[in-house]
Length: 169
Image 1 (cartoon, rainbow, N blue to C red):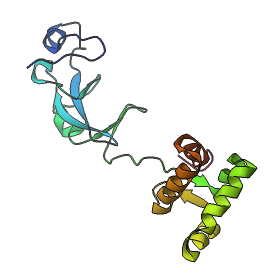
Image 2: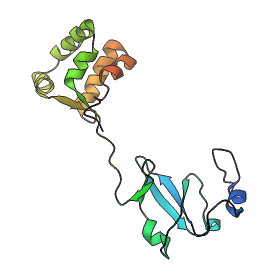
Image 3: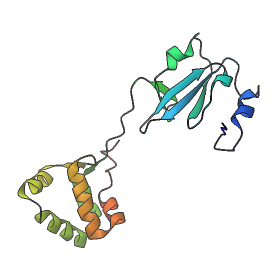
Image 4: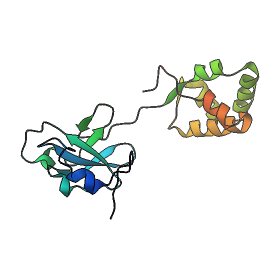
């Protein structure tokens, strides 16, 4: 098998066996992308035991323990904070304040949106009218996106329904 670094194509075996590559005593950890987070896989002091195919590799310098796998096994790694965590980080909630839809819409678009809403069932109209925001994970958001895409095209629908800055994570 052949493994190379994506950024410059360097061969893993040449890279890992170069004594200048890693700090003495550092821990090498492979991270597997599980969709919303990076999960630790292999954890070793010795880089020759690591084969980082289809994973990311991080080096932890200054680990004082004896068994790094006990400390880092089955942890999630946060690329922004460069920390290991017990739980999967929750993706930020994407919500839109309904008032932002109207602020972003032109007068003509607002008339079209009102027409689209008038064609909905009483229940759906009440839900839309009574809610102060729309969560992007809600099924009604998907319906709204579909209707606005049909009316204005995908790019404009996405602009109109983009998350509100003050409310989203």
